Length: 356
Image 1 (cartoon, one colour):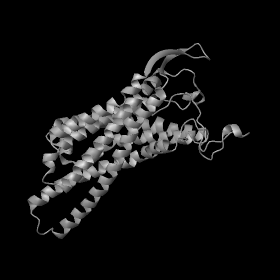
Image 2 (spheres, one colour; image 1 turned 45 degrees about the vertical axis):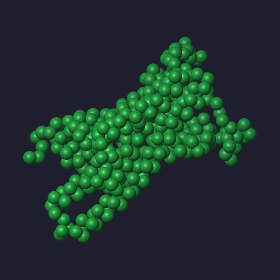
Image 3 (spheres, helix red, strand yellow; image 1 turned 120 degrees about the vertical axis):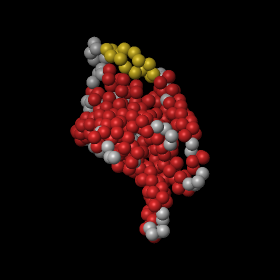
Image 4 (cartoon, helix red, strand yellow; image 1 turned 180 degrees about the horizontal axis):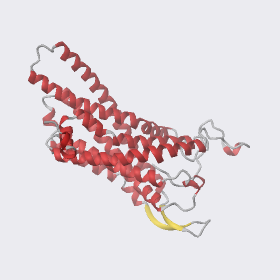
C-alpha cells in the first residue's frame, strides 16, 4: 500500500533491533540505501517500466476479456481466466494512475495533488483486487491438480455453476474486508500551514491507521501469502506430472491410439498453460510476498525507520512494476498455449491470418 503521509509527521516507533537509537548518537543514522538511489530506481521502475507495462496491460486484458466472452463460458477455465483478466485490468488501471501521478519528491510538498489523493483512496480497493487475483490463480492451479488426481470425478466437482458461485463468494469476502478502512476515511479540504493553498485530503479517524493496517492484512497480505504458497506447491506438482506424462508417452508411443494421443495432447496443453500462468505469478509476485512478510515479521522494516526506511521504499518500488508485468503478459501465454484462444483471437482481430 502506498503511504502518502510525509515521514516527518509519522509517529516514530522505538527500534527493537540492534540499530542504535538516533537520540543516543551525536551522528545521524545513514540509511542503508540513499535517497538518491531510491529516487533513481523510482524513476526507472515506476515512471518508465510500470507506465509502459500498465498501458500495455490495459490493452491486453481488454483483449483477453473480449476473446473469452466470444469463446463462451461452457468450460470452467473460461470463467476463471475471464475473472483473472478483469482483476488484472483493474490492477493495471490503478498502476497506470499511480505511475502517472506519483512523484519521488511527494513527501516534500505541502499540498498533496488531487490525482495522488484519488490514487491513495483507490489503493485499498486495489489491494483487495490483487488479493482476489491471487485467489483466482490458486483456484486455477488447484483445479488443474485435481484434474490429474481425480480425472473421472473433477468434472462433477468443478462445475461451471460451482466455480461461478465460488468466485462470487471470494469477491464478496475480499471487498467486505476493506469496508472498515473506507468507513474511517473522509475527504475534506485541508489548508497548508506553509502556504495559503488548500486541497482535498484524506482524513482518518483516531484509529484509522490501525484499522487500515488490519484491513491490508485481511485483504492483501494474508491472501497473497496463502495463495502464493498454494500456487508454488501446485506448480511443483504439475511440473512433476508433466515430466511423468512425457516419459510415459515416449515409452508407449507405438501403442497409443491417435484418439488417445489427441486427448492427452490437449490435456497437456491445458496443464502447460496453467503452469506458465503460475510460474509468471510466482516469479513476479515473489518480491511483494517477501516484502509484506518482512513487514509483518519485522516491525522496524517500515518507511519511518531512519536506517531501513529507504530499503522498504525500494522493495515496494520493485513490487509495483512486477505487478504490472505479471498482469500484462498472460496474453502471450494464451496465444502460445491455447489453440481455441488463438483461433478466436485471429478471427476477431486478424481475420487475414486465420488458419483454414
